[in-house]
Amino acid sequence: MTATRVLVLNSGSSSVKYQLLDMRDASRLAVGLVERIGEQTSRLKHTCVTSGDTHERSGPIADHDAALKAVSEELAKDGLGLDSPELAAIGHRVVHGGMFFTEPTVIDEEVLTEIERLIPVAPLHNPANLTGIRTAMALRPDLPQVAVFDTAFHTTMPESAARYAIDTKIADRYRVRRYGFHGTSHAYVSRATAKLLGKAPEDVNVIVLHLGNGASASAVRGGVCVDTSMGLTPLEGLVMGTRSGDLDPAVIFHLQRVGGMSMDEIDTLLNKSSGLFGLCGDNDMREIRRRMDEGDEQARLAFEIYIHRLKKYIGAYYAVLGTVDAVAFTAGVGENADFVRAAAVAGLEGLGLAVDEDRNARRGDEARLISPEGARVAVAVVPTDEEMEIATQTYALVGKAA
Image (tube, rainbow, N blue to C red; front, side, top):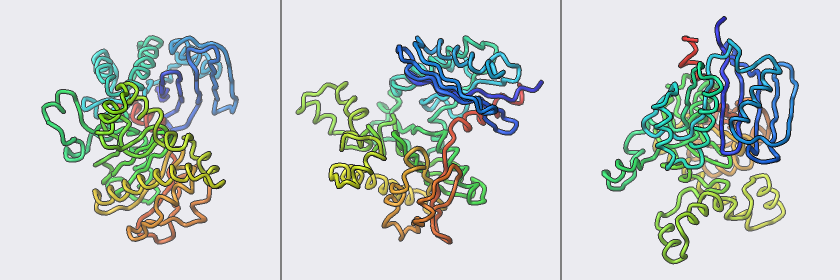
């Protein structure tokens, strides 16, 4: 029997998202989420896509080991257990791969050691990713485990885009450079946008706008990333839900020297209490829109700052690429907030950018154009599918040998 299934695991600090896919036809067999791991109120929601049945369980799930064992039990109930000979590999999302990992990689002890070494530049993500990997390896030590890195797609950036203008010896010693994140999303969306235009990825220049609670932009020339907004960490770039994005580095010194804040306090401020939340007390774009409609000026200012930064990156990446075939909106806000998309391109008609009001207002799960007929630059909504991207990369690496 040929093994064609891939289990995709996205392990967070207190959650595990998962999907089981059959790569013969890229179909989903099961999806689920374990959340609030380590609490008394842990919850698992599992859906067997083939039958349409959904199972839920509540109660304490002590750790990631217990969470993955619970996932395995749910899969087994549907005849999709981890012991199935049809399972070819487990693909893991790993946020930070540095410059060492430029493509999907079969995990061994050397790989684990390197992911661990990168914890200082991804302290919120890499430890959780490692925990999920080690737990999965213990459950199926005989099965290929593959790491797919958020940073890998961006390793093609030229040094002129990746380097910061600081002393090169210090930068190299401490690995200080722009790495970028959301790479699996940017890779998937840039290719899906080319397909939407009826072209090959190598024939298309795309600006991808991944807009969720975390947000990033990328400039993709002929299927290759040449610039991206996030940097050494996922803090740089666009205004996000709770993250500041770009700011003068001297703000940190000022807050420490004049404000008397510790580095940990500043870190928390910029990552968890800034962005839209810091500006108006809400990081949910739907709530911000509701407040704007009611005349809330604080919410309106937060929105205007968000859009101002977004437009700056669109313009900057237009200049980087020289010619642009499409601007693609994706992720939670990008896919669902038509008013964000309209505001982001308003006034950019001189660059060939515009949205058709009716097309933009339509909802749907499929990739679609929202620009006017015959527009010089296509504006698109392209739902991202990071799990499919991870599964595709994982199976391409191990599938032939399975």
